[in-house]
Image 1: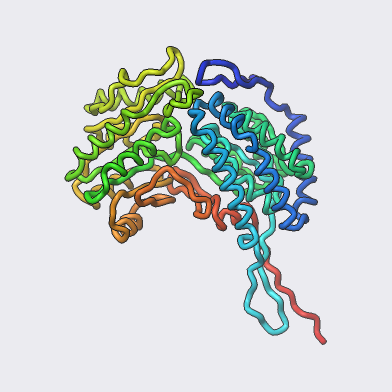
Image 2: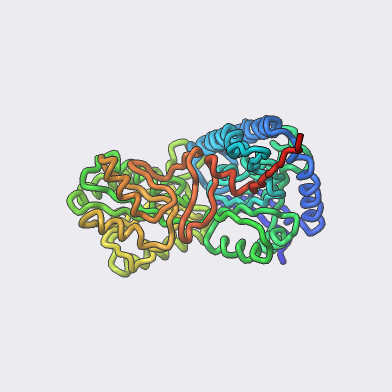
Length: 464
């Protein structure tokens, strides 16, 4: 078993972080502290917990420039976009804190003679949070803040690609004055992750990552009666209706497909366009995609940085090559996009037409700057194709008809349904996936449900 790891920057190949994985003794001390912290943290009044967590949320990203630069060097996102993730962390964190009093309030039952009855939500215990690299702040905050506010200590394991995020979160927890053991950081490999999940002090696992990773988490948790939320992959579709405003639609779908180099679980990976506007849409889409600037993400003019690793780039290119070999036609010439570096994972954006669902590029998650585009005859064909997927995280429709959008959305198998928007998360709405996109619910008032358990109080009054 390798006991050390290095984080290699996709930007220039440099080493941005290096250390050993935490050993068994460190894990034991961490879990012991978390278990001890639970006894006191759950009894801290909600208002006081919320105030401490709010201070932590604010402190974690107070140095936005440093947060942005670290993101760029760890996973390649353009520096111009780094502040957006810090802002999203703040918005989601503040929103979940503000929703807590209502979400955690007692549920009072109708008065019954001689009885007081209510349901109270109580914390589960130690929450183990496993976060990915592609949105390392945003995916962590979804469960981290409500878990803490609800009274659960958290042990955070971040991706080996974004350990500086975990380190910064750990420092902010201490600076904000969170009690010892309430929020701790571990650097772990896969086998150690499984061992932590099996530990009886862990009460819940919150995981964001691949379908394969979700299966591994589920296998480890299956030996115990604990809950696990799994936010997994996506192959998110968009349907462009005949009445869509094409220029605005193309601008938004280019952003949805290529933002973060396409490395978004809710990014747009397949587009279905009504045949009457298909050619016009392609023209608008290509014109907008050609405006992307591929290059060093540290430069403020760069809008498309590298993908996270060379092996990821190779897997993405394999999907493109296989689709072209099967008859797909590329719309974008990679030679028109300068700014890549030899031997590093810089990829030009690509859009493929003359594709179908026999091709992996239309059925399996790509997680890169590639999108397939197909014409459809009508709404029924679009719905059938959108549902022809093992994933179901988000989907979108582009139309001027609100009633039509809602009616189509009722037939599409997805966790979130957008009209004239995509690749976005509203923290006041539930974030869920169906099919292989996972299970569980984060954010919104409902997000507190999986991080607490209901306890019923049935109190008979003393006579007299």
